[in-house]
Amino acid sequence: MEETATVQAQSKSKGRWRSLIAIAFAFIIDGTEGGLINSLFPVIRDALGLSLTNLGLFTSINRLARMIFGPIWAIAADRYGRKRILVIVTGVWGIWTILAGLAQNYPQLLILYTIGVIGTVASEPIANGMIGDMFSSDERGKAFGALRAFATFGSVILTPLNGQLANIENGWRYGLFIMGGLSVLSGIVILLFVREPKVGGAETELSGDMDTGANEFKLSEVPTLLRIPTILLLAVNLIFITSLVLFAFAVVFLVDERGFTTADANIVLAVFILGFAISSILGGFLGDWFERRNERVGRIVFMQIYLVLVAVM
Image 1 (cartoon, rainbow, N blue to C red):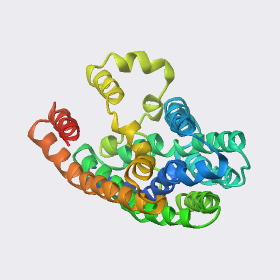
Image 2 (cartoon, rainbow, N blue to C red):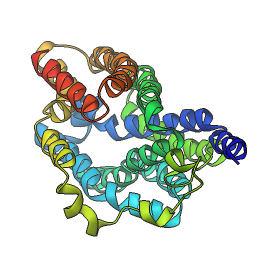
Image 3 (spheres, rainbow, N blue to C red):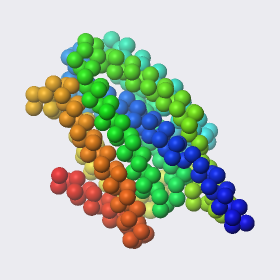
Image 4 (spheres, rainbow, N blue to C red):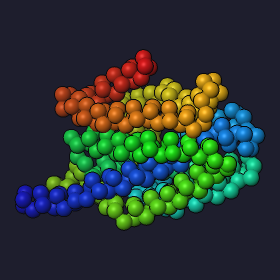
């Protein structure tokens, strides 16, 4: 029986790294797609007569969509299938980004960008759940680190390339067309290469005990989750991670205050992103090491060290 269970576990784990790479590709596109307005805002501002207030609104919409629609997409994924929802909102949804490239004024761009962003925020919560089910707890740090590293290295390449579009007339429109098209392509990649794991599969494969309904996310369970000290602490911590907001204004700051061109500012931005990639790789291995040292609080201690170092830097 034990040998059979092991064979079944290996079978269910087959293709998980291929799935992770395909999901990382979607991460790259969604992240770059959602941040394109920020990275090319100086030229969009000139083309449509916008102000920094407009950039603040675009940034807020992105965060608001993540807060509201992240859970909604996660619930839909639990109900209708995570892979299916990813194909729709990460792939087909890219059409809205293509349409945003046709916007002739600020209201049109705002509406189309908002609809597009609603889809780009879906991949993170859904993919995190899928990877958690593909890899056991002692491998998750490595898996999530690899996911972030793949996605971030892709952004390192795409960010300066997109920045060069600032040197072309209406280049920001071409950027939206390209990223929307790549978004559709990412949906096809997920459809072909992602093998959806069963909910709770990584921890229960060997026992054969899989109650998929017990692992579905429900809004009614949020108050219960917030009574868990660790979850509450993480939620409060996020409010104070100011880099999430400041990073959106990096390109405009470099252009307006430091005299960079928009294209060169995106090269500097890519260097920051490269640092994120290195951090993702090291953080994944260190997170696993901290958990092995102390299973109860290891990862929590590591996160606090990380937060302090970010603040100091």
